[in-house]
Image 1 (tube, helix red, strand yellow):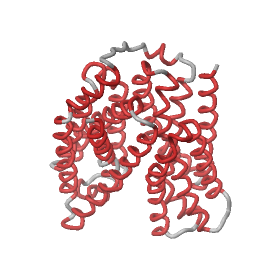
Image 2: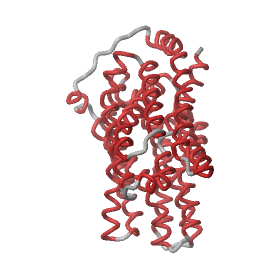
Image 3: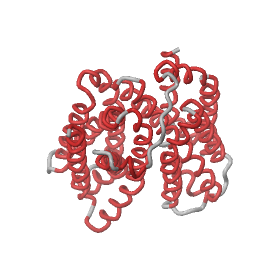
Length: 385
């Protein structure tokens, strides 16, 4: 039963990654057919992100009332409905409407699964599970490209992903007894009352933890969005080469999380976070300094490898740092701050780049890197005191 539930959770993480990269892959074909400006993709992304923030903040109440299994099952069903809605949409307004359940479902799944795994499984599983999220992110553009090459049928791509999500929804509802049994065996039916958020934020290290999640996602999302443009305009690298190596940034994250799983339990979450920050530092220096092109390109991959252990280990450390009772609420807040960082910081860098140039990217990343290093060390220091 235990191992079967773990398989269900791994598949759920693939499901979590499937929709995340779909809009970016489909938008070049969607935009001319919808007759809207290119920039309108940003508004869809904003609506989805707002939904994820809201559902992350509500996740604690939902999980306490309905349990992890039911919340995850209903949330994946919500994303399946939203993706199917995209597949039948012919107007931009319809996309905006279906973006609401799209975001609400994704945020609840993220917070629920991350909390459950942090509470019940070893650190290596958190790294491997987030690696599976990367698999989902990498898989959906290939599915979309298959349909686009047939008849520029972006609706078919969304329909295919929605069918996959619907199949996973059926599997999740069938697996509900496994979730209940696992909770009964590990928690013995223990009930925990929610703390007011104001009191939760007064815990030592809480603010530092939330800002660390904000900073990490600001760094990762900004690097992922702007790396290719930086390589072309600031380093004189061809667009094709830049695009290939920019995609290797995400491959570096996925491969790094797979490898991190083998050593995470041995070194512990705090050391793994430090290793990751050191890796990011090395990569930032490689893209900052006027080095040969191959070293600059390698720097992106190194940043990806450095990012790999940071996010999963920060989540897994939450019950140990803040206690099991507060961990559910804390992870919901952490997910909300993570999505805020992902939503706001890439556009902010775009604003900066318009005025100071794309060459500011390494310094922008370095700012959040230093902030993360200071915040994590301060968080652990306050917990010791």
